Length: 51
Image 1 (tube, one colour):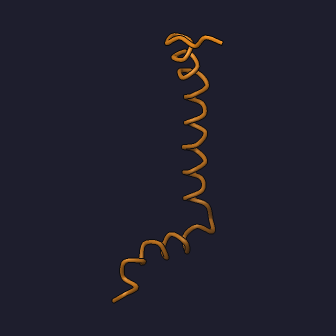
Image 2 (image 1 turned 120 degrees about the horizontal axis):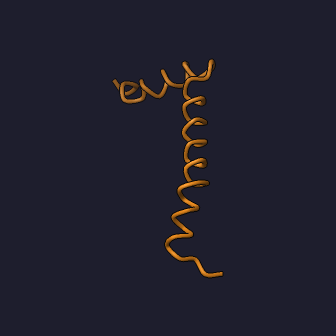
Image 3 (image 1 turned 30 degrees about the horizontal axis):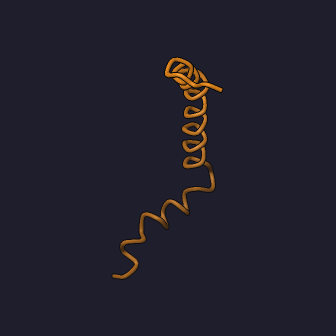
């Protein structure tokens, strides 16, 4: 199976873009989910726990 630049570019332009868009949408939905506020607040206050 011989992969040249053009075939890899075509794959990345089509399926690669959809894959990256899917990951982006998943991360955005994960961050803004209803139960995520407490976890986000806990993570934001990690540097201040030693004070």
